[in-house]
Amino acid sequence: MRYRRRVNRNIILVILASFVFIILAVFVQKAYFKSVEARNQRIIDEAISQLKYRQLSIDHDLSLMYPLLDLNHLTDSQLSKIYMLICTFYYNKDDMKSYFVIVGNALFYSERGHDFGHAAYLYTIMARHFLTIGADSTAYSLVSKATKYGSFYDVENLITRIHLLMNFSRYLISINNFDEAERAVNQILADAPKTASFSDIFPPLFEKSGNAIRPLILLAQGKTDEAYELACEVYEKYKDDNELLSNYLAFDFYMPILYVKTMWAIQHKKYDMAIEFNREYTAYCNKYNFIVKKQQLSGLLRSVLPDTMQKEKEKLSKELSEGSEKLSRAMLGEYAFFANEKFSTVMEQLSLKTEISERVQSNLCIGAICVFVLIMLLLIFNTIYSESQLDGLTKLSNRKSMIAKIRRLELLKKSYSVIMLDIDNFKSLNDSYGHMFGDEVLKGIADIVLDHEHKHIKAYRYGGEEIAIIFEQANIEDVIRHAESIRSKICRTKWSQTVRVSASFGIGTKPANPIKQADENLYYAKSKGKNITAYKINDVRYLAERRLEIRNPMPNTPLELLIKK
Image (cartoon, rainbow, N blue to C red):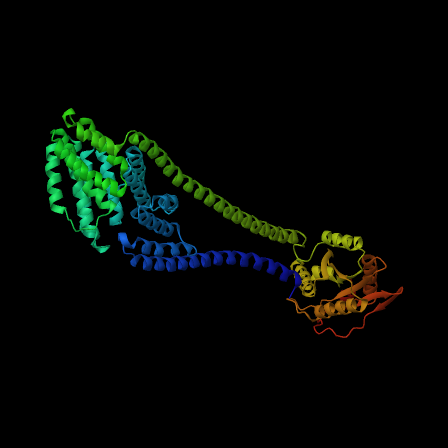
């Protein structure tokens, strides 16, 4: 196999192999991550199926969720779901410190994974918390943020959609959008029975909570009597002395009902009833630490009690304690600010960390692409440069590249030898059979010479029908053997015309000028009958022994044509 063609073929194979490797690597990576994602999803689904969603089993549910975060290559959507469930459990546990540590992660991955339903739910569940502590303005601003993710009615998960709509309805009441608030309540009541597939505790809880919002809508519209009647009706229908109370049930059902009753009693100046309703309301506030809610309603009641009820006013004042409302509001403002700053800071830190990671990955990819492109360009440049060093007809290296090669060898003081070959009677062949046949002979002999190329053996078209072959660090015997091998192959070759083609060879070696000596020996070979190799050792010229006879002599060829140069 020809050395040069083998090199060029290897370059092309390297380029093709690189492209194939990159494509295969991309497909393998995608297939790997897809299989890992599917495996992780199966593990997550199995863990979720074991959740109990009960107040007494929150620690058990959390113990199922936290190990999921250790899974490798979780997607943003999967992380969003895990963190959202952890946030929900911490909220149900009333562990708001842990909640605000986690909620930033949950919001970050929800937004990155485009799980806008989860993100909206997290904002509204935070809004609900701020509602319970009396930070209504903060709560409604969070609900407003949640609306940017789209319509709550389009959220697929039933539990998430109900929680969204419950907090959304309170926000709508605060901005006097009563028709939309009623629509939200209707959707909650329509979805409540469907939540039995999650847990049997959900349908009655959501039905109670949804119906408790309607009296608040009527109260906000100024229909106090209708609100009171509906509150009493709902209370009688759903009150259960044996049920297990929770902060959800207290805040979403009992407290709204008692708030409406207290406001009705105050409006109708039935202060004894108002005090009784407020006492029940306060009991829930004390039990679940809704201190600001208690201060707000008790403070309002104390302010409207007549002077004739001085004893009751003093009792309310004692319960509230002097300056407690102001202190609570200050602490509330501080806590609300801290909570907002906490999850905002977590989101910013995660965003920065992810941005840095993505930039590093992007820079690595860009660097790898640049290196690959550079290698490809170098290979292509090398191929183009190599082609520019070739003779167009014979594909041998040209004379310019030969001169450059000799200069490098002389500069490095390397020993080298040169074979000069000249096609015998080439002008006569051109004249007799045409230039096309002459080109065929040139290319054919060049192919034979190229078959003998090696790392340290390089062939050049010296000019016309002359070819030079440079040997690096070869002894004279190897050079003679090489010349004879080429000469014999030329003699054996059959051509399109029935004609004999041969060539004469001259060898030049160091310490003389190899090119000059080879040229002189070539003409010596010509003078000795052609089709022979001449060389010089110790200033004595020799002719190589012909070991092969010409097997295709041309018939009917004049003798003078055969010996004429």
